[in-house]
Image (cartoon, rainbow, N blue to C red; front, side, top):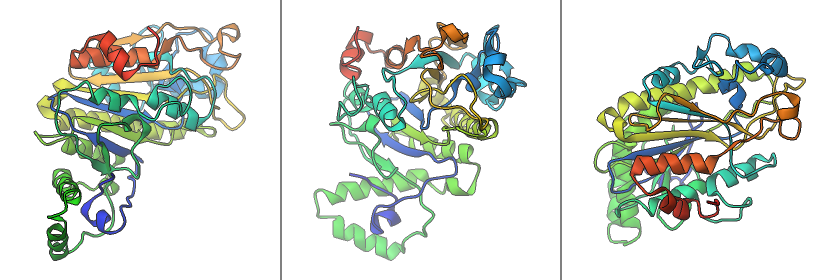
Length: 375
């Protein structure tokens, strides 16, 4: 069941997004470790996010958008991080970030909806599973209350499953009158289903405080909101943040730079706002698939295959590293003659990251969280 802010419950459980367009779903678990999955809906261009400037074919293959790498942070002889990812580059230098390239789920077509479903459910085909890998992860964590918090109109597929999960969405609507809120609370008090939901919603409202993402810089405000909802003993321990704006078929350079800046600000804000909990926080940033190597006729790129992914946190096992079996960008090295070839599976990366983060045996985690992923 979806629980929105108190005035949204009274007005039909409808919500509004924020300027960065994240929609956030949360679940609690009895652990002091935090895990946040930031999904880039729309197919983010990994070749611009983490540009392989050391590949001899990069400049000619990417044409005019190759210039977006200039001014970025050169991380090693092969890769340069986008210039808008300044905080991410700093975290990489502090060994609190790990970057992956030429990575993809098992999906090999080019539909956003199907690709996102495969990324979130980790099934062998789109819509082949009703539950998501994040909900399956919750079954491995210590037993505790799972409460629904709302910042989305629906639970994302990654969080669907037997463990109760909800969503939280800030609204620009005015607050309901306090007397009305008291009367509604009294009305719900004797109802065994509505009473705990109402209590959870009002508790979430209190944790969110006075933060209004719609009035500030999107990434900073979103980071503060997520951190506030994950703070303290009653806060969420697992979260999913949906970001949009990654489908860059035209004028890619400026549009992609803007959304990258927002995510970079969100991560940097989470780092500061989480306080000591940052040392036990893991953030995953990933997309459903990448984009074509070559630029189209409108200074953009079309749907591709492999992309880049990022991990952040205060206690990364492989912090300060780029993990990639680089396939190359020469015409003979491309997937289907047009895309970056995938050389690493998304599921393998997540299994390694989560098993290290939570101290769970990798094989046990694979069997439960990614049961369709082969050994």
